[in-house]
Image (cartoon, rainbow, N blue to C red; front, side, top):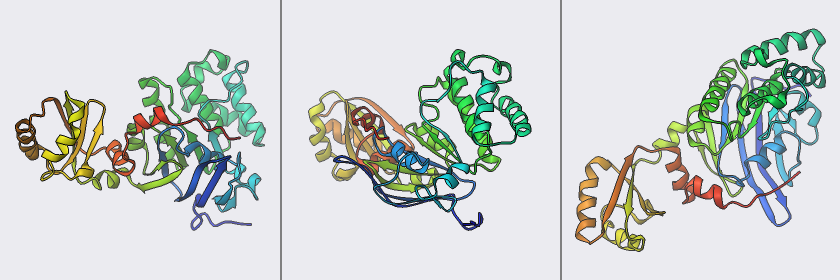
Length: 330
């Protein structure tokens, strides 16, 4: 079946459900990704991000719902999907006893790229990823950042219409992470549509033209990073309180200034969502001081994606990551 690239979205997911035993790892997820977008899934470990991309990568079939890549069903037309897809999963799948160049050449042969194109494309990708000097070295000697870049190069060998990246910078040092961000931005500018999963707020904010926050298998909100942050409509004020039991007192004292749903307890204090924090904070401090609540620290910030996540889930993503169960599905 022919598809019209100007009208068919690169990804079209409708009411996707995946169940493992008694666990609904993906619970009614729907979203679309258009040509040229860099779309992100932001959420903690165990939220359903990896299960969703495994379905899109034809590694799993859904329990119910549909998922299409470039107009092709990921289960009924898996071969058509794979020819249009490049995938770099969370753990790079590299042969430690092959060189960087051999790894790329193998990827080219697996995708049936013509021999002359394999040689040219390998040279081009090694140069693009800054790996030309390590092309003849065994990948087992590569650093974590080099392995990530080589895995990304392998996924790009056949010029895929869609590139899927699962936690692409997980475990990388800050310098390697920034370098990989630069590469991903450049690849996207050249026209490759991308779907990436991440639990790094800064990564999602910098890279994604649009993103969806996913929690407990459901998409709770989606939009551009700027739109999502603007939707908070308030600044964040974090108060460190010496007496953790004072949270109820704080809510009572600030009831006239801050609604109860905008006061979230966190370790060592509370987080407030406050309109025009710079002018509101003096009155907040006066009321708390008059009520006997002692503040040991205060921090103000403009809305962030972490604030968006907290608003729609009631939790910080970092806290949630530590408490999520591990779900294995193959």
